Length: 244
Image (cartoon, rainbow, N blue to C red; front, side, top):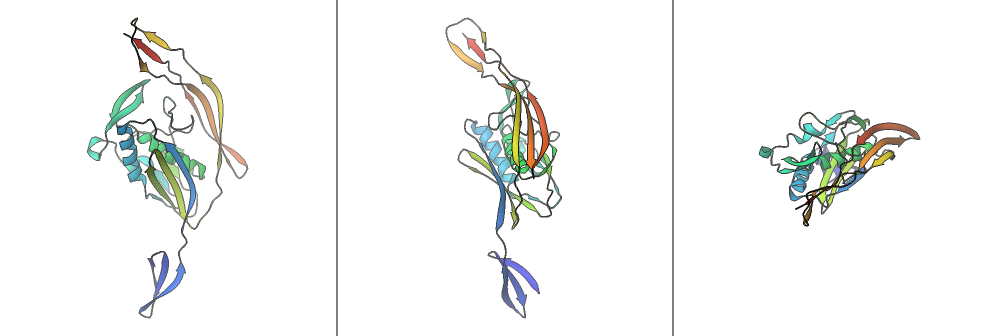
């Protein structure tokens, strides 16, 4: 007897005919996480969307390890990415693939809340605006990766898409459910630098919008147990006003 899948039905080939054996269970969403693309540049949106298309459909096998960089590949011009603003040493510079980190961050939060084991995750130098401090996941091909492990005895599929200003990642499994985890953030310190003014003219422009600093730890609560996930320190950066 041979089974094939047709329109969600498991069909058994028996004596030259097809007999409906059972309906396959629909994929069950385990968790959905969304970040906002509002305020991002067109190039950042393009790069995030390109990474989303490559992420969509990834299947993480039972006990399997998933590498974001391994799935997405290099963020280069020849793979369709554009130059977009990224933070480097406290300044915004234009680099290939700027915006991809929002896709990795959104996936990271879905994996974290679904109970995946976090094998490798890196914070940004400065806290990004599209997620709470401590919950970001910076990537840079090939050396800075996001890697997670599926701890469950069933495969988990990644469904990723963009809907307007929303970047959405959903993890789902065939007919399976698991208890979701809650996340706690402990913000120990918040710092602000006084604005800096350069020049003496009457016309002004914002040369650097500045950044708030944070010292934060993240914990995951699963089955009543509190698990430490990460501790990150993001420095503050002064707002710079130029007079000319």
